Image (cartoon, rainbow, N blue to C red; front, side, top):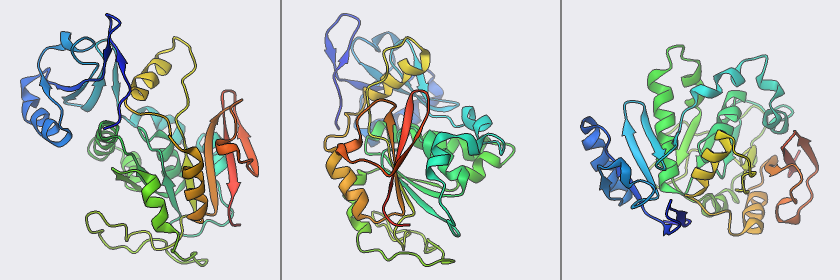
Length: 293
């Protein structure tokens, strides 16, 4: 499990992550997490930030990440206002990912899913989104968010969107090579087989994906805002992409119609490759590489 060093309040380095039981009701859930992730169980909140750098906490709302001071939770409900018909088209990512004549059931591959907010926007556009997250702890938080959207969304609107989001707990770089031999979908053809996949297989994408989305980790801006601090907490779990060139090259070889890359507004192009065009906001931009029309 790849982890960065975590700084404790005493200044020492701490790479340990545990499962924290705050409520005995969730002891069974904590034990299952402990076995699945190979992490110790802790019952003392005061140990978080000293003995342990971070803790996964099961509770009535799902799963959260705790650093001794702040809590980060996978949760899509905060995104609902951005999904409204009058607001969704104005999203920078939606503008970057909009294809001419996408056809029925377009498929997007999110190679760096994180907590899935960007994938949610893509799914709201109508894409079936395959989310790849290699870090097991981040994947647990994302899975919790997906499950919660299915069980607690009374309107059904959010669950309809997340039904098009499929989580894969693996490294996308290794999987992208499997798309190299897939044929290009003809107009009007469905993109999925409609069959349940076998464990460890990837038979449910039968054509080259329409979109590949890359969000290689870049350092959070040094501001004291709560969102930035929580982003830094999540970044403690994962190292930035070790080989940006390999990731982008694999994405190109997978032959999507378009590759969309999230970058800092003034940051360099990924792997030095100039995009066809960019959609720019105040702090970030989306670089668009057109692989096929």
